Length: 381
Picture 1 (tube, one colour):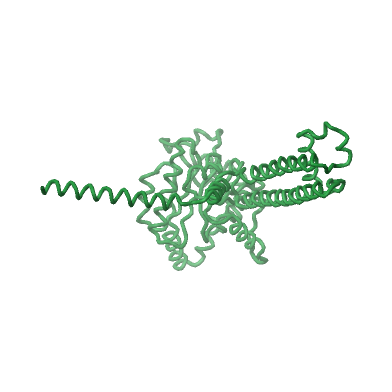
Picture 2: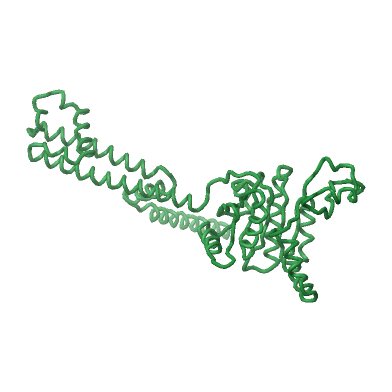
């Protein structure tokens, strides 16, 4: 009996659940045809890029078809259009459709219509045509506006080669752009590409404001700066700015976050660059905030990255300059690109010579060191 009672209880519970489910389905399915059409239309307009054009063509086709049918109907009832009553072939469906199209395309065409019913139908078709052309102008202007806004956002691909690529944007960006422009001055200028999450218009405005400063304003010295807005961590965004064709890459730290979070993003940026493998052959400089996190990047990519801990270097320089007056001028002269500069170049005619033998071989330069190739011994150049 207990077992039978439990079975009855389970059966009653199942029946109750099914009734509740049917009630919920009835409530959910309680919609009109208007709601369904509106729902499908809203989905189509939001997902298809050609939805507005297709909708406009559909409305135009329906207006021409129904307008031609109505014109044929009222004309056969006794109201005619000029010479159409004497020409039986004009009464065919195609001719009436063409007549309806002329009313849609040219509002003045319906002026020759005769008969009250024909004039009424012609007037309605003409009004519909005016609304259609107003919609077409609105859709066209909206499409042009979206295209212009898309260009302003900087979503197009950068077609440059041997350019300097800056990933990120912070308070050091303008100073870095100035130094790169000074370095490119001897070559007649170069190209600097900036990829950051900030809006393209905002970065361009910041650059133009720095250029317009009267006293010691930023001078590009013939270089051009191209901004692109996007996430530097994404591979397709890096491809968009020509990461494989870049001469050098500078990864800047992130503003308004703590040092660990900024260094974590720098580490992820290095991993994103490392996905390109051996195709990435340029020099990469990574700015970090905490000197303790430097080993992480060196562990991940020790072969193609140069790590700079800005706060540590600035702190050391400030102490040295405070202890030794004039040190700041020396450091600025050595590290900056104004005046004399450092150049690293290979001369095949110097291969096999010692550093002592090449010290007097340059008329306008002073050799200060040798950059050795991998596994090369330091006996010769």
